[in-house]
Length: 81
Image (cartoon, rainbow, N blue to C red; front, side):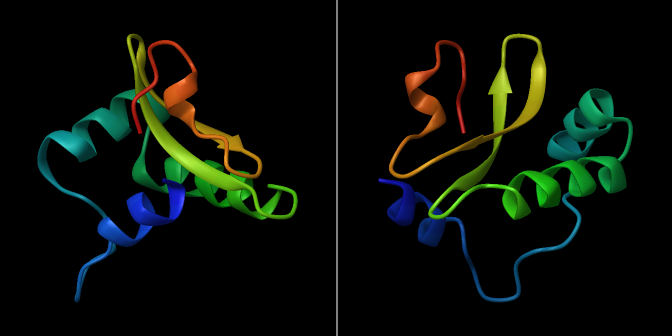
């Protein structure tokens, strides 16, 4: 599931800072896009082995989390990648 989700998120010319509602939610949860990016990169760089970094939506806002192996945040109540 993780690889399929990852590849389905890709698009030609994609990437970079989001706009609109997603950016507003990132700013509300992390203070800025730069702060989000730092936290997300840290999660990815410290995920052991075949770990994953995720941006998830929770009832209290967005958060960065990481999982190992084939685990995914859908198994955590209230988290949606």
